Image 1 (cartoon, rainbow, N blue to C red):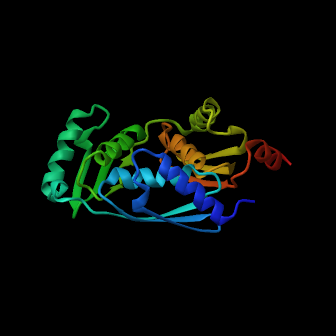
Image 2: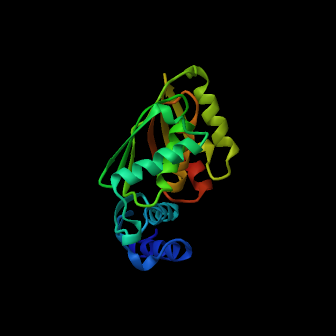
Length: 229
């Protein structure tokens, strides 16, 4: 069984491997598979990239992200300037229905609200904002207007899982109650768990996803044997 010390070293190795992360800026502690990352970075992308890199490592059960963003003088922007940039970016992105989304900025933290028809539009709005220099965090409170019957939701999610090589669909149970989805079963990593949730969330007709997938961090063939016993 992998020790916390071994897991920490694997995480540090993964941070070194990522070209867009300066591992010297990131502190890592591990306690029974729960990883806490700390430090200071000068870009929101680096913060997100560090968290994603840690979630990919086999054996990580949960991640506590406590990285601060300290922008240099060249990236300091007022809330008004950030708002203008976001509005312009939304206008240029055809996946974002800008007239349906409200933007609020508080000391560099962006809050998105409103209602859109499809989940991909909510995701697109989030992605656009994350690409803008000067922001510290994004809170996406956009809701989805449901126009898809829930009866086909489970089938669409299951087929999507089966198409992807990085998700073991045989170990995931999909329960649908109206427009709410619950994922149960066992997965090999946090990355696989997050990918399954992302797919379910992006499926037409889904409003809410309860992700109860358990990360056990062992080989997939062992996962299957244990799950079917």
